[in-house]
Amino acid sequence: MAKIRPKKKKATLVSPFENYWGKKNYLIFGIGIGILIVGFYLMSIGPWDNPLSLSVSPIVLLIAYLVVFPLSILYKKKNSLDTSDVPSKN
Image 1: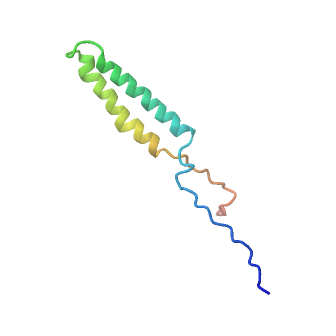
Image 2: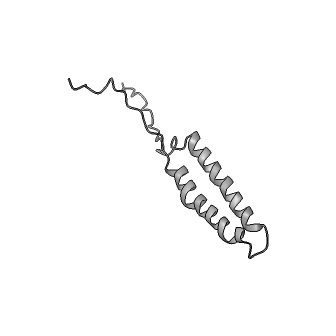
Image 3: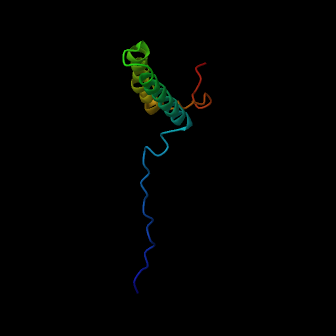
């Protein structure tokens, strides 16, 4: 008589990016979108030679694109280490 083999469970692959973005990442990203909206609004008001449109709004947009968005992508919560696991030096 043939032996019945137990069915093997298929291993499911878990994406390493599944739990990467946390609440703070989405919050920082939302702040970045808000800063972008403010920057484009500042660019749109007034005539074309308005100092606000020519100097302030590009700086605001650069801050959003070069600081806030990369910060929201690269921010990762640091794991706290238990000091009870580490042997103490006495």
